[in-house]
Length: 232
Image (tube, helix red, strand yellow):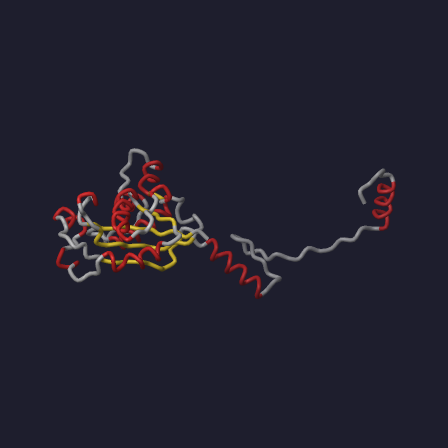
């Protein structure tokens, strides 16, 4: 089973080198590219002011973050959630740079950009010359954006999980096939004589046995008798 974590963050600004911090993390767990229902979502007190430009993007204000845990309080549970999974991120360089800046003081090994799946790069390669931001990709794939007035880490991770599936080839990419096979297998276990082929209503019947006639057996024996250095 392939375990992936679709991840998004919101921050106080655009560059951790300037002292900017993460204020929200949202994660969606996937197995074989499909959501399991497990999520991780946390707001974080950045211990600094949020830039006005960032607030215009995500709407998260300093007053809201004042009573939220600092990163040191959530770093362990966050890393436990993403442990051993491939990260799926839109513009992975941005988020991983921030995440590594946050986890470095605690001695954890850095997350590796090369091991992440960057959906921005996939979209640019698949649709060269077309807009590749999350909004544009949701519109391309007819994914509902009505709840996205502002950016939000968990909401954006949920939308990205849908976009990722479409980038991999759409809903036919494994969606429902395993479940459908399991249903058919369960039906067959209850009635082994019935094996319904996908897309048909024809009942599979056990093959009939046909026995050779005396003349056919004699012809076969004569043919075998002529064989030299046979293997049987």
